Length: 206
Image 1 (cartoon, rainbow, N blue to C red):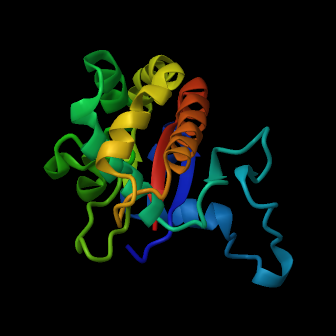
Image 2 (tube, rainbow, N blue to C red):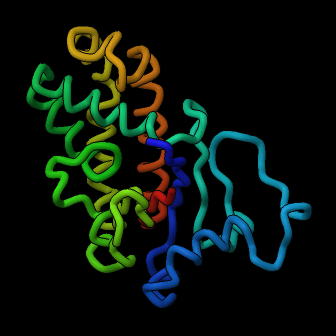
């Protein structure tokens, strides 16, 4: 997992007006405008949202995770931790967490990973799984359900402490601590809630 994750929330209507094959480039160009060199483009302080070009007129925003160093492996490890702990979770909590995390950092059916198929054709499909063009795609219609699921799951996260200790604690390839695990989940809760409120989708680029 040598990839980094650049996570965007974006207006699907704006992206839909861009030719399919240029939509990934449009997101990259929003962060690194092609007419500006590195010496003139100042990145914001690390952590949280960056609205591009400004909050009022932006059609996308980038989220920088406070609880990671930018590497995608932290998200993959958290997804694996959920896969390990979910059999021990209460049925209602498991249902809420499945709905929340599916397609973000965990896949109920990996063969249906939207990042591999271009999100149902909205983006170009990946041609090489070793070097994906997308890490995740979550369309706007999926976000309200995820935000509702997170609202149900978040107050009950501490119920996962014992399952995490039994199945993940001390294992390589899993979050170091339960606190690391839940802190990252809470950031994903922030991301999904914001995207749902705006009616936008989520895109993860390497």
